[in-house]
Length: 221
Image (tube, rainbow, N blue to C red; front, side, top):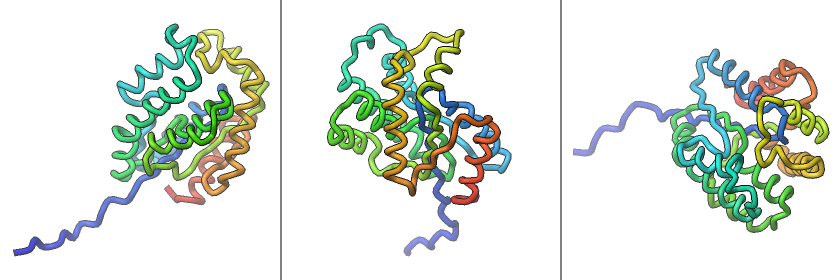
């Protein structure tokens, strides 16, 4: 006999929300505040980051950002290592969480590669897009916030972090920071349905209020 159909409804799909911006823009603070707010609303939240987010990804993160072995890394190698970390994160963490109805807040995602390696490192757009697509499969963010600050401000904020040694990206010059900012703004203009640019020079409370308002308008989480 055929099995009776289950009366249980499928779990609603979750959300993937990514946060982008140049070094020092305040992404981590805003992700933490948003996570607390969503949990207060009884939503299950996963916070992760790129590169990293898995045991393998964290090893790659160290190589990319802190290891002395990476000091003479070529742009092509950098691109492939970011993609490798992302591929692992998508399949082991993000996709299962979204399919289970959770909200994933990701500190950087594929758009970082488009900007940092494509614009900042001046790698050809075609290969960057192909590698990005291969790493993420069909998974794209439902919404991407770009926390925007002037390049000079990001540069100053990094220099003020006296207790931390700058990593490879944080050690770049002001010209690189300007390329990154311009790259993000151009990317946001090209995909207004997914990107929201937030003025990161205001107080963290004002920035957070804008983020929450956008989420409520689009998804009522």
